[in-house]
Figure 1 (cartoon, rainbow, N blue to C red):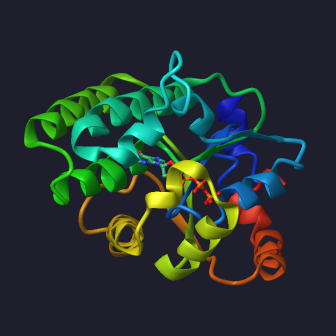
Figure 2: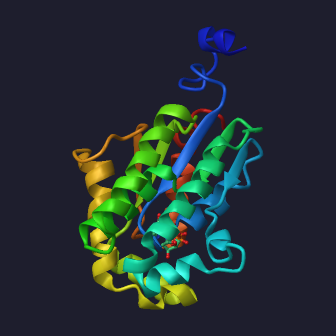
Length: 230
Ligand code: DGT
């Protein structure tokens, strides 16, 4: 049980403190989160929850991601309230393996994306207030904790190149300024840690490098990333 585990010094810390771990993988659009998750998906004790982008593109037949990019003023609240729901569903989903890895979290949806829309005038104050009330209530009432954040830190220019290469239809309208603004919000939240609470320790991986170099880092940091559950 958890207490025995806590006292067993042969089990590496922090696995000793708690048997199951949740890792949230964060970073700008196009920074390489899917590559990271695909890599760790091969670990037998790890379950991976990819971001529900496909469900955002088809909510009872409506593509909310596309609507949000086409007319943010009109559709931001619609989109963000659905993102918040799908993130909550991932947070509370029963964990069967020792490590649960999530692509993004309810935190980056709020602290980076909602904040960005509001700050840049794409979301009215009243919509921001309603989402903030929901978010505060969920923090108090739901089990949305994470144990580690892996921040894939890439420059907006690298992200732009990768977005262009993958050529997702909805993202054809994403300008560099949007990525720059999101980058600053991730940096404020996870590196400077001045703006919003950080819900877990942050492990930073520099993600501008090429895929094979990045995978070497994944391997070197494997034990830290899987919290000792290697
Ligand atoms: P990766 O593997 O690092 O390239 O990850 P992506 O770019 O596939 O995944 P992500 O989460 O950065 O973004 C997927 C798309 O969904 C992208 O167009 C940005 C958008 N998105 C994700 N979460 C939010 C959100 O909370 N609000 C807004 N407005 N857009 C979001």
